[in-house]
Length: 241
Image 1 (cartoon, rainbow, N blue to C red):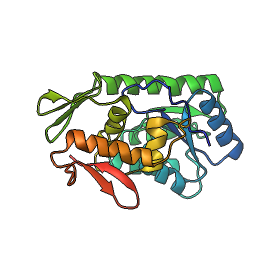
Image 2 (tube, rainbow, N blue to C red; image 1 turned 90 degrees about the vertical axis):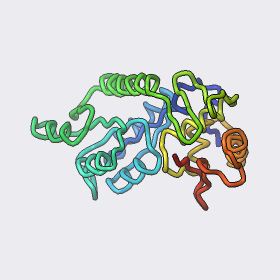
Image 3 (cartoon, rainbow, N blue to C red; image 1 turned 45 degrees about the vertical axis):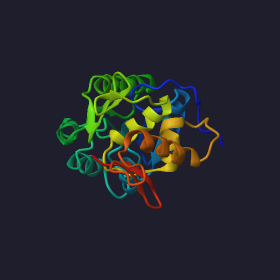
C-alpha cells in the first residue's frame, strides 16, 4: 500500500501534518477525513471517546477536530485529559451544542476554536488551516532544542554536537526532530514511517532502524550504549533528554 508522496516538502515538522477527527457520526467523520486527505493531510479517525484519547496520546496529531457528544468519554473529558498532561495540540471543537455556556466551557478547558453544527465546510477547512499555519510559525520560531551535547535548531534545520555542526541527511533531521519534539514519548516504527517518509514510501520498517543507527553513530558518545536515542522494546524508539 502506498504511504504518500516521498517528495512532499518538509516544514520544521517531519512529514505530513496529521489530523485526528473524533466524531461518532459515521458519514460526517468519513466525509471530513476524505476532504482533509484530498488536501494532503494524514487523517486519523475515532468514533468514540476512548479511541480518540488513545490516538491523541499515541500518535500526537498536529490538530484535533473534536465532537463533544461521544460514546464513552465526551469531548470535554478528552480535552481535560490532554491539557492535564500538558499536550498543547490545537483542538477545534465541532459540536451541535451551540450554547454560549458550552463554548465558554470549551475555551476554559483549552480549546483553540469552536464551530457549531450545521457548518459550512469551506469555513471549517479555513479555520483548520489557519490553526495549522499558526502552529507552523510557532514551531519555526521556537528556540533551539538541547539535550546533552546536542543542539537542534528547527528553524535553521541544523544540529550541533559540542558546538560543531553535524551533517545530517534531510530524513535524519526529520526523524531526530520528531523524537526531540516529543521527549520521552515512544514512537512505533510504522508511525515514524508515516510521519517522516509519508504514505508513498515503499520501504520497510528496517529503514527506520538504519536511520536510527546512523543518528546514534553521529550523535551519541557511545552508539552501542545510547544515552538519548533509546530503543523501546516491541514498540520502536524514543528520545530522552
